[in-house]
Amino acid sequence: MVGAVLSLGSALLSLLQLFSPELFTTGDEEINDAGVLVVALLELGLGLIYLVVYVTTIIIFLMWLYRSYENLPSFGVPRNRISYSSK
Image 1: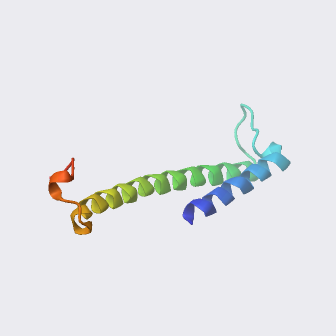
Image 2: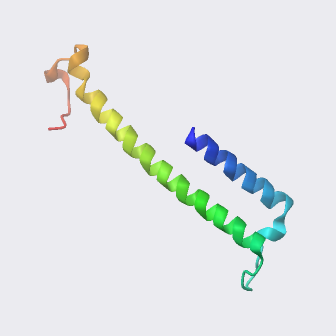
Image 3: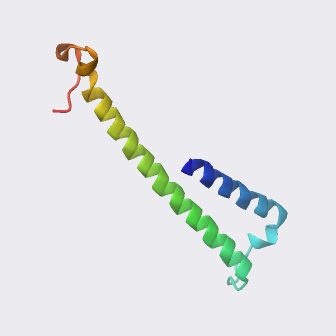
């Protein structure tokens, strides 16, 4: 769900870049335009949120994988048939 919202935000920023390219091109001069600064901060914020969601997803998946592997004996798989152990 969070990934879908972030993708929607990224798509909206891409559409903004398509229809208002002057907000995304600054050249070598300093950024004095408020619109350019706001768009740049939005892109930075989206990137950081993407990173946090990505790392959180990896951690949750690894926790699920560990727990599901530990539950194999509960589903009738003999311990001597399990190749790897967490211990």
